[in-house]
Image (cartoon, rainbow, N blue to C red; front, side, top):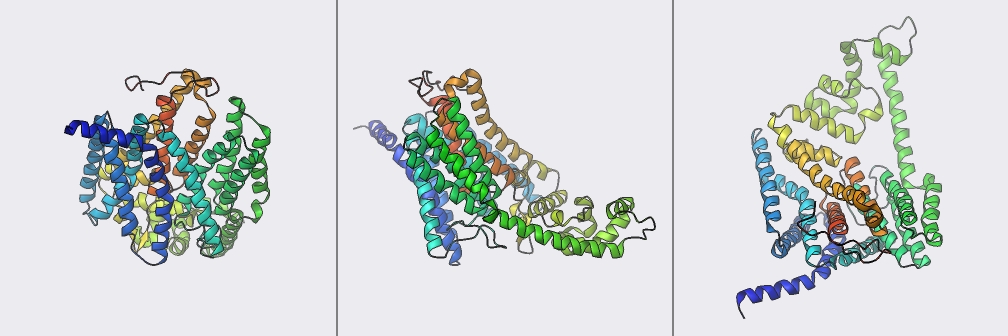
Length: 502
């Protein structure tokens, strides 16, 4: 047997087993999250989970390249990633590189998402049953997350969503925004799959289990995910004529119960906790500022009097307030600089808003860097000061500050390509392409992008960015690869060849 024949046999065997491989890669994700959680709880290094994640990425990338019939896509992607990294290194060296290794690790975490997406597209091109493997993986992951949460509650080892108020339940998972995003992305798909079984009891059970977990994780975006799943799937079933009200009722009943009980849940209680704190602190600020305000013979309201003051007078009045509430920023960048960055605000909700706090820090930090940093970003280690990490809590902002306009532009272009595929398909023939399958995964994709815009829980978190990669690959499969055969499946279209793909 020649070497070429042996290679073909190996490829054929790999292709046959790709659906099982895809399922296994999916199932590894929550297991690695649990391992990472316990490493942190036991004070151990995260080297093992880091090596596991990078090992999985390396295996998937090599297999994708080996099986691909269009290896130039991988080569071009590699060249683009290398060029961006080279530009980033050049920008970082202008200020002096503090930790190239940790910066490289952080870069790999970001490029993992598009790389996984390209590889999963390759797998589905070679074996379309990989889509079934993905669905199995999503169901198993949902089951694992549910069991882990139950075990953590039973053993009183459940991590709270909010550290300060100790509210919310996450299970054995470390990052609230990422875990909320993962559960939110899984929910529309697993609810749709339960609905498709045509067993009402299963639809009720899965919907209730998913919504209970979203309710108790207690983020505002988790509640948005419940509403998006309910309304989005109902609209999809109506338009595609797959509506069955006994099963759809499960979505509305669970949503109504969650909304009706919102005052008893961690999200509402945490918001009240923060609001009460902010109101108390605002009262202290008002008293302190009134002692420093100039004479007010006309008895003007506070806001009007403050507006009549010069900027120098405002800085005099605000300086002690900022020195207390934004002490770290003031010590790092001077009080006057921070006051100007906050546009002379004296509202506690502005000064204690963690996300705005970190964005302000990175904006001021960027001003100290050369112009090339706006193109290729800054080193992650530069965002750590006095052992506090000021890496921003919004993914798109984070990609910009870390990898500049070039990195953000590439990320947006990559995501925009898949949005274009969706719009292209709907414009071509919405009745054919808009199926319950497409609706469920489309809702998940919208939830993922929403979480990326509003939190740092998707694009730069390898555990949650993995799910975004899979969603993008599924969108490509549904638009460009799936063979539709009947009207019930919206499906008498022929698959688009690789040459005709947009």
